[in-house]
Image (tube, rainbow, N blue to C red):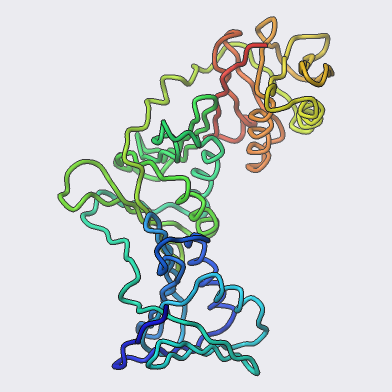
Length: 384
């Protein structure tokens, strides 16, 4: 597996263990456990001017983290073995040194370990071309946007354009939305000043997974890139947060006009405490299976009667206190989806869930507390 390294620039690195572990862990998140191309199981370690860049890729996404280090040269080392080795050690400093045969020796106090390396020049690079647009968002905003919408991403391969989060800037708002056809979640954030519109991009599921741990703290710079010929919409994106950079290929498709399925505000509104809803949904979900996840909500004295009627298990019914009127004789919902929306509302500090209903067969608009703007979900009703 190992190949001869570049003798003109022997690989040599000395770096703090904690920082090196952090960089390798982040880069290794982009590395698949199983690969048919051997070098895709490796991270690329390349010294620059006082910095070490650690990069991992799966050809669709590339994660790169830079840390301060001393040394020279570059080499590719097995991603997960290096991460696990660094995690097990308890020393301040790690030294890596390669020889002419491509064997890299890790030295940490009394411990030595050897790795077969591959040439750095063979490691794939996810390059970018012409700039489409760029946007910098304040601390936590991008995580709030795509993290909230991500719950509704689809896994259906036939509608591949739903397998991610659509992100755009329109009318001075940054907007993230995802849907699987049964539910839709959108998050918006008002941008300071007059921000120009940005063309929509569809961030794939894997990129969302990789991005979320990076963008929780500190500002995030998002850049979209065009194809080499400069035609069409953005095809790649880059997220820079702190010393980490994520690049990914975007989903090549058109996201549906999601605004058409969002019901207008108004109609009947029911406000339910999240604590009370969680208790009732736990009870109802204990009576659901893959064949039947529906719960039925119907008015009763002082609240709602929630019923789960499962042909395999039996029937469960209980009362749920609420404020407002249902506006329908009854309505059916997917208990798992409703519970997920309740958890998402709790994560942004909401104490209740507001259900706006315009009719028994119409989509249900779901909102957090009135004091929390910019978060909205839509749930399609079920036949019960």
